[in-house]
Length: 446
Ligand code: SAH
Ligand code: SF4
Ligand code: F3S
Image 1 (cartoon, rainbow, N blue to C red):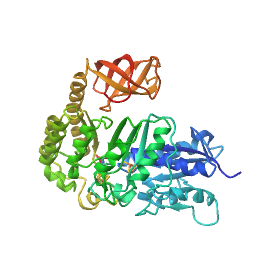
Image 2: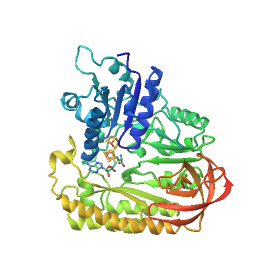
Image 3: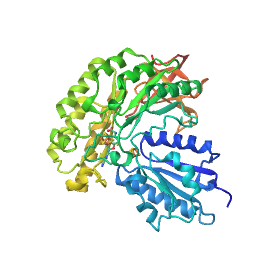
Image 4: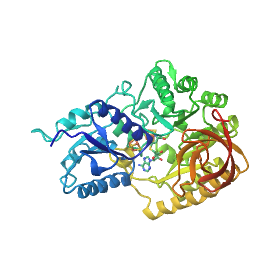
């Protein structure tokens, strides 16, 4: 076979992986690789994987079998990248059923061209899962295609060691990128015609490079000409900087939206999770956010059925949801992860049916809150950014997003993807807003 040159990358997990896949494309395209949209045309399939919950792993295993069977008559090379690579390491390569050809962890993507060259050689199957204390990929700008939002990694790794979480083991130690390098990348993004950026890190509050902290970085990004919307994810409630709230309130181009993961509403459970804040501290922080920015939209992550969580303790999670009134809550059943303290020390003792019951209770409490918050928007004029022409339901509609990060559906009109337009909200469900355009282009958020 001629040297393999066409690559299909499929991405699982969080936005950090989405951003990493763009980084991988930049690294490989410099070496002459090109990218194809499906596994059928590819010489190499790369799955950029997630290990955060067991079902994330399962999805990847079944996908590998599917790819193998679809390419039975014309076998393809398969590589595993991302968090499963560092979590399972060479066990993946040794699995005879999976027949994986190479693996690379999140800090080894510059090695990919070498790893690919070594496939089929005399030595062991190529792999690199070393975690670095320094690699930030500052010298590679991701290859972005299409979208109206640019993901920008400002740091990598995590030092928090929440007891349930595998990320510190799969992505290694926390390190921050040089702020000037971040600003240069964002200038380039603006020059490419993208005006919304989302800064990414496992805990953006702990961003620090010399004297620059996260609030200062946000100020620098907000000062970049042409940046119209700035978002960030995720901050951690334990060290959320109050001065950032004031900066957000002052700056028109910082979206009044915060994803702030609660995880649990009971202080004993939070302590066992090593979250290092209490229920009261979380409530106080949410109040402060609302006081400084009355229109703030808050979303969160919640885990149900963490080891030893009782039904009464779970009721406190519901209580926090009622008090804070998040616009959205991403809810998960606790899933024990290899290497984590929770897996080593605590039995997974909340029965599956009880986890399912708690998850349903959460979803049923959250849905009417999301709907009420969305209905409050009806009649308001908002600026939305057009993301896609055509929606899942109708080719005649546009999918857009408002400042609060809520999806807004509007009929097609004389504007295109990437435009900001003013709309009047005319209807709502718990997950989307319906709007009619006011046919006025504007220069950014209202
Ligand atoms: N760094 C991010 C979280 C990344 S993981 C942060 O701290 O916000 C995304 C979410 O997955 C977490 O917020 C948590 O709610 C969930 N999660 C992580 N580990 C989990 C586990 N072992 N079981 C179930 N959900 C988990
Ligand atoms: Fe995981 Fe906690 Fe780090 Fe988030 S802050 S990535 S939940 S260890
Ligand atoms: Fe992201 Fe999953 Fe890794 S959530 S950091 S891809 S374990």
